[in-house]
Image 1 (cartoon, rainbow, N blue to C red):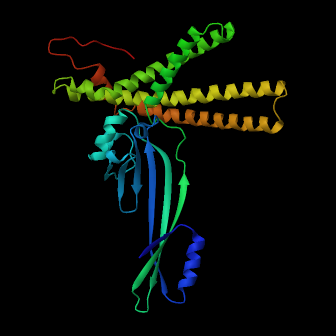
Image 2: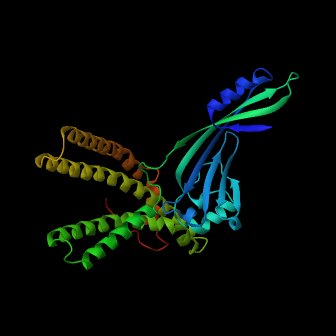
Image 3: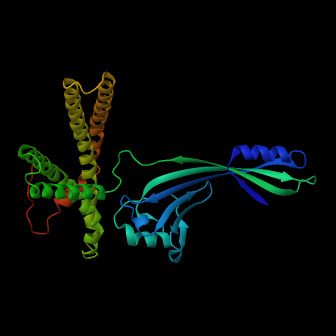
Length: 326
C-alpha cells in the first residue's frame, strides 16, 4: 500500500506510531520538475488545454492536458525545454501545437519542483507492507528578464503603436493640442525605428518559403543571405540595447528632478530612483563593452567571403567585372 503525505508533521506522527510495530527504512528519492508552458497570447489555454514539460533525471516528456473530456490528453518525448513548436521532435503534441501557435514561442509560465521521499514500513522478515511518500513542492515564476524570445513581440508593439497613432487622430479635442502633437510625433518615431528590425524578422520567418520558391539548384545559394540577416539582427539588438538604456536613464533623471522640485518624493525615493539609474547606466556600459565582440563577429574574416559571394557573384563568361571600392 502507498500513502502520499504532503504535510511533514503528519509524516513525523506516522513514523512515531510505526516505530513500535514496524521496521522503518528509507526508500528512493524522486525529483520531478513540471514547467507549465504557453505562448504570450495564451494560445494553448484558448485552445482548451494546458501544456507541461515533465522532467525527471531519467525522462523528459511534453504533455498536453485537454481541459474538456473530448479533447483528450497527448504526450511525447521532449529531451529539452520547448521553444518553438517546429523545433520539437515529431509527435502528437508537436502536431497539435503547430496548428495553434504559428510563429509564437512557447514560454514558461510556472515551474513546480517536487521532491518525494519514500519511507518503507517493513515487518520482522523485512518485507515491505506499506510505503509512505512525503512530497515537498517549491513554486517558481520563471517569467521576466531580457531576451529576444519571440519575434512576434515586436509585431505586437508595432500593431499597438499603429492603433495608438490612429486613435490620436480620431479623438481630437480630448487631449490638449500640444500634448497630442507631442505624442503623435513620438509614436511616429517609434513606428519608424522599429520597422527595419521587423523587416529582418519577416525575412527570417518567411525564409524557408522564399527558398522553396526557387529552383532546387538555386536554393543553397540563398543561405548566405540568411546568415547575414541573422548577424544584422544581433548587431541591431546590441545597438538598440545601448540606446534604450541611455533613453531610460535620462527619462528617470528628469522625473526625479521634477519630483524633487515639486517636493513630491522623500529622500529614500530619490535614492532608489538613483540606484535604478545607476543600474541602467551599468547595463548600458555592458552593452558598449560587448559591441566590439559583436561587431568583430559581424566582420569576421571567415564570413567575409560569403558576403562577397552573395553581393559580388562571379561574372559569367564574357562579362566585365565591376570594380568597387571600400
